[in-house]
Length: 361
Image (cartoon, rainbow, N blue to C red; front, side, top):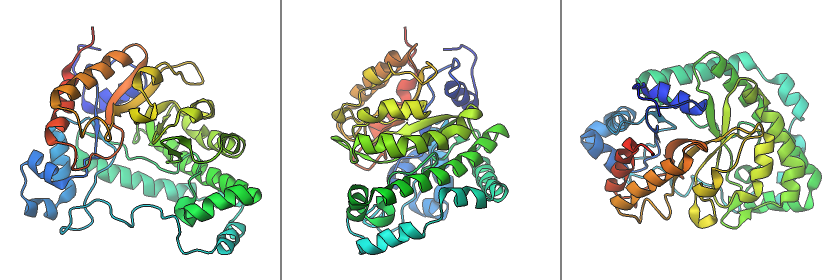
């Protein structure tokens, strides 16, 4: 820790680049409970709905948040839900397997995707979106997650679970094409992010990754992932690594079987975790990047077994423990494993923030 007080952006950038910080930084943006946002911001429901982003930013500012990964806003005023049954992939999209295969055959090749990519237009659109939101966030850093950057393996969101897993099992050439197409698109995204990093409008870390693990490990065989997905991820992440931007992998479920090839592909940080799946901060801080550097950790408070169930005193102890465990081993940015839903007591959220003043021995 450094004694000189840092700005919020300086604090995060120092943590991202493995430098000393004046205190443990924290990320926000995933509180999916508008009632909490209103209470923290001392805003009425009418005020919230007139400007949900503005009120949310005010709430995170009052919590003394260093940066925002995103901002959850309910779909409508009636149910106060940020997600519903249409938010996630379904097993059956109503798409015939034959039609799914035909769509894959009609996809452009990876070479065509990269050749036709208009980097300048994509960058200008990205640049505007980042600068516009940063202006609203004030002195909090705006660093939205970039899902799909690097590569893509979770095509179940396009074809449904049943079709996707049947294609992986019975149509290996089509499955390989999906991985290659995902790699081409992911690399294009990383080129845009990398340019933003070079120009100083995006920080030196980016949250990315995919939900491809259940509580029992990867939903696809490691043999397939290592053969077809890992090379695409490695290729896709290259632009980020060239400019010193650290890819931080979103960990859902038991990601441990994938860690070796993720790190070999260029992943330099982890975000999560679910301790009930074996993702334990005490063990994960021992991992190193491909270059032997400490990992960047966004975490580790679980929204499944910790934040909803512990007392504020227990949350305080867990925050202190994470700070102690990461000292000298990993660069810690306090965050949650996933969305903070209404089952998490507001007192626990406040406890998480208030515990950050702790200085390890």
